[in-house]
Length: 304
Length: 253
Image (cartoon, rainbow over the protein chains, first blue to last red):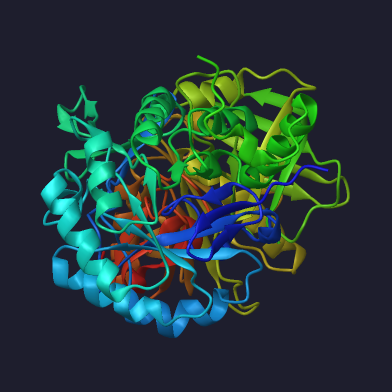
């Protein structure tokens, strides 16, 4: 019997290392025909901002080799709507429900975190300081050590549960950013958010996305994500949550070996809506096959 | 209930620009409404990372079969068209909201352009099973764009226009004589956006109920990623979940 439990600290305990990434799994409800949510470590629901946002105009998506670009732009109905309308529907889910919280200014992050802090069934927030598709703020906080220190320490003062900080790969030295998040009170870091990219329709001589650039995700980003998880895991003491192109259990195990304590599945949910559950089963099978009693033995177990 | 199922390709009919795939499920089919679609996985095509949303052309619940009429537009659909009988085709289905169920007293006109005729077959078949006989206006650039016309004739009164005059009246959709001669209470449209706009304009002018099927680029097909949004009177909504069929009153057309 393999022990799959992962304790990420400050009350966030996962049944297994598999979570679903924000923006790829809706509020969980969209996937209940395909996935038994009680078989997952957690779900991270759609990026939410203090005030409602309409997001960017259509088109918001472009398919790329082994991946896709998106520029959704954080379309959501705001924190208060989440609390009043969505939270009552999903608080009974038998898994950890994390809220991905984003903002365009410091005050919005702080106020949003305060409002979510009192929700019993939300054991953690994933602070999104790395959305590449929002004009003001968003990624601006996540690309400098001073920016990330400021937003994480301010949110830390009002948020008492597990604070996960989602990092942008669009930086020169991601380990420095992770260290700044850790020093400012983050309980864990998750990485990577999408890579800034662009697609062009040569026939029409037009960009394929409404706002020209977007975030690249899917299998194509996995080597970049794996490298960054490895660099960050060596630098920080807090747990690292790995994501970026994970499509199967082997990919997930690779992230654990690189130093991740848990993983998130993103774009792969679009290709196989049941993939998250299969990854959880596959990780267990890997541990059995290799004689690991507990999944935590995989963390950073890269032989090099 | 939505399902994810490995279907077996049991019959394929090639129409040049389009292909019809008849697919059999190993398990009973769930309820499927006309206008709903499937997210079809394309294997062994490196350029096709995401599933392809394809409208449901026909359903045979007794035989557990779904038919798709697919236009060969890009790498993904060409890959599907090249599949051999016996191949496995994975589908997530049935997705989205289809056409509203018409009232038995209504005079209904179904308007299809190009491969947009695909979902109208299942819609007309369901109506004919209820004892209705819808009028179908099927439009293409040329006769080759309109496969299976004889099947459509079994489920409704078929009118045809082609831009080159190779079949039916010569001209575009809105130029057909039936717009002058026929009185209708409801129009269900699927086709190129410009054609749907033109039909919607007529419907608005005459105060006729009108539903159109949109095909915005989508990723998840489940309302999770928010990529396929249409700007409506209610703001940005997912075409995959709240559509693909919309009453034109809800659109900013």
